[in-house]
Length: 255
Ligand SMILES: C[S@@+](CC[C@H](N)C(=O)[O-])C[C@H]1O[C@@H](n2cnc3c(N)ncnc32)[C@H](O)[C@@H]1O
Image (tube, rainbow, N blue to C red; front, side, top):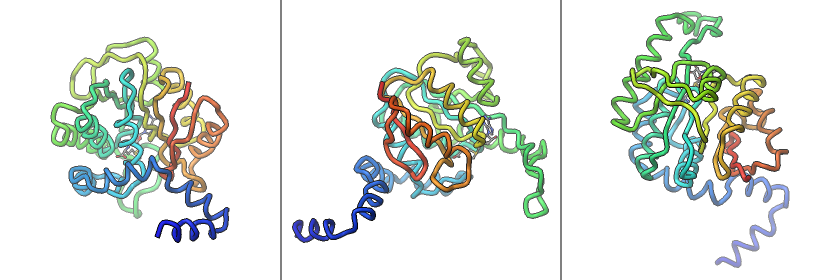
């Protein structure tokens, strides 16, 4: 049976074989099995608003990063919106008993939404900004119990400026967050322009430990976001290896 399968594989055109290997490396397949049978993650994706579906590859990258998390360094999420990815990360930290500090930053300001959605809803309004921040807080307090992150209302660049000077800041839950130090995993899902993604990478790169992970949302080849240009540049950087594509680029720092 195995011989037949191997023969089948050998008969595939090399270009197709390469494409298949690229799509499903062993590390992805392992995380995929774990996540697909995880009742809580699947349930969260149906009850919390956001873009992640139970089959989304980014959740496989979260699972891999947190199961293999370096012991030193924080988890940083840039851009949380209503907290779906935040709660999945917090849950995986609890599942794998990881006690690394966890921070997110988001300004919850959607002013760049210049056109009404469907010609009807103004997502750039203060009311929507207030809604998103309130729902984020409720989602964290409801679905992550004591594991939710320090949440700083800020653009990522300002967040990292405070990180550099090890600032103590009040977070949206009215707790004191002590910023600074090493980073073990960064999920970059804020502004997706070239300039913003490049700055986010440069900031994370300063603090990420060898063995640490970075996932760039909306960086898939041909997805139309400029994040993919930054991801392709990192492919040329010998200090990083591609772990897998979710289809978005998921890297590990080597040294
Ligand atoms: C796609 S949503 C995040 C979705 C969330 N990660 C999830 O998967 O559930 C993008 C978020 O990034 C935030 N954002 C936009 N620009 C940002 C920046 N420069 N720094 C931090 N957050 C930013 C937006 O306010 C928005 O809430």
